[in-house]
Image (cartoon, rainbow, N blue to C red):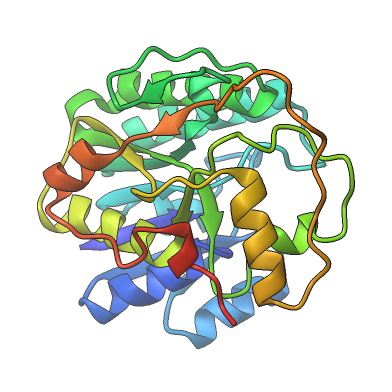
Amino acid sequence: MKIAIVGCGWLGLPLGLSLQKSGHSIVATRRSETGCSQLNSLGFTAVQFELGATLSQKKFTPIFSSDLLILNIPVGRKTLSSETFSINMHDLLKQAAKSSIKQVIFISTTSVYGEQNAVVTEKSPTHPSSESGQINLLVEQKVQRYFASQASILRLSGLVGEDRHPVNYLAAKTELAAPNKIVNLVHQYDVIQSIESVIKNKVWGHTLVICSTEHPTRHEYYTWAAEQLSLIPPSFIEQQAPTNGKLIDGRDSLSLLGINLKYPSPYDMLSR
């Protein structure tokens, strides 16, 4: 299969390498010439692309002649307003719908559920409170509009990887809120195996939730994680109300995909 990964960065690059290893032909985009040179050196067909570009340009033909489009562009680029991001993603999907692209995978986020104090599943109502959540939900709707049963949406909880862990940003900080709030994380490896399962098993027409199955509190987990890495633990303000926030339950998605998480607990995700 010819697969186009629009946004071949921290998640897209190892995803592309894994799909390439499985025999797929990879078209991958980066915004810079340097980034494209790296992609070419890995055997990808690299396309220099930035959201908002004129899509009829001939240089974008490799993207729109692909079989599958994986949209992996996060909301919040400093150069784009949220409204512009939404419009440009809509234009990209319209162009994809007119092309030879047959399926779409959109990498979304569990922030579309907002700040619910409840167990959240694939079937839970969406109540995005953040700008990121609102824009991702709008893009989800466009994906479903243009590709319907030939698209799958992956709502990811907080992403963790070998070189990326939230404790590095929280260490030594003081008076952090919500010590009893539940931690919802997912490892990069498990996201990649989820995407590969969608492709291999033709899991189209679904909205999936990808998250670890264990959920410690912010206080206990980030205190432990900081100690493991010899960092200064963060300190939290005392929480008056016993609000735990949302607990992301993606077990039905994992069952549908037929996979077992390599990192089912946030305690498994820390690189020492």
